[in-house]
Amino acid sequence: MTNAATAVAAYLAELAEQRRLSPHTVSNYRRDLVRLLNLAGEMPLAELQVHHIRRFAAQLHGQGLSGRSLARLLSAWRGFFNWLGRGDVVRANPCEGVRSPKSPKHLPNALSVDETARLLQPSDDGDAVLLTRDTAMFELFYSSGLRLAELAALDCAALDSALNEGEVRVLGKRNKARLVPVGRKAREALAAWAALRDSLAGAEEPALFVSRRGGRISHRMIQLRLAQLALQLGLPRHVHPHMLRHSFASHVLQSSGDLRAVQEMLGHASIASTQVYTHLDFQHLAKVYDAAHPRAKR
Image (cartoon, rainbow, N blue to C red; front, side, top):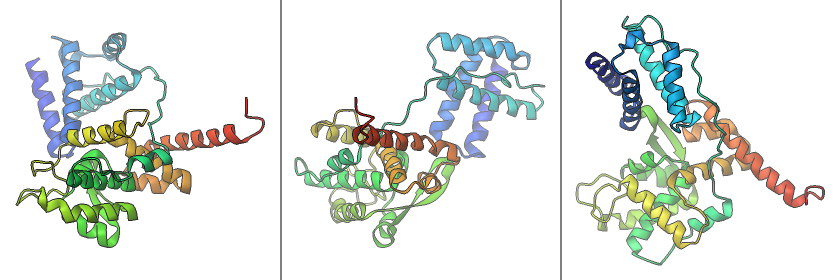
């Protein structure tokens, strides 16, 4: 177990330092690999075979792990054993050929255009500075299809290009930079926030969006502020930041039909990740059909 734990630590270090995966991703790999070590017990990694991995997967599935979670787990294990194979620690990858059970596909939750407009309507119920900040954050989320981490990491240096050129450079997964467009409403909200930011921010704070205490706003606080706003407006479901990203993607796709452009704006490495929004688009078409076609009405 000690040798296996050492191997896991070395592999995780390579993921972080050479492949430059995010701390969150490395943490997920660590959790998955610790699970493997616990299931293997005293059995050396070099002795694990396909039937062992199948048994481990069946055991976890029986404990309630979904097919999607098992697929991610097996992917982490497969990558680890490939790495061990390159170091001649194992002769074959015992995860090859092991597949997770299929799970029902869940489409991303997206707001309708009307719900989004309602959510982003400026409010005067509360602290004016915080409300201006929140409006700028959420407008930028929806305008540019950002991830939560990408928005929270933005510095004031991003303001010039956002306001003057209508674009902002963000650092996505695996430290991959991309330019995303910033719409008119978002630019107006950012300009209003820029005029008030210094009244809240600490003297040396570079962050574009700051908390009441003057430091960079946390992911959790952004989540809470958005959920509270949706609750106050009476929206019928829990709203989280990623829902604004989903809404951006589905609304742009509905209007343009340009899947490749949506892929680029979202920063997806594979278009397969973006194709889920074509299903959302079909849902929209199906609703229009059901509401409008004489033979669709029941």
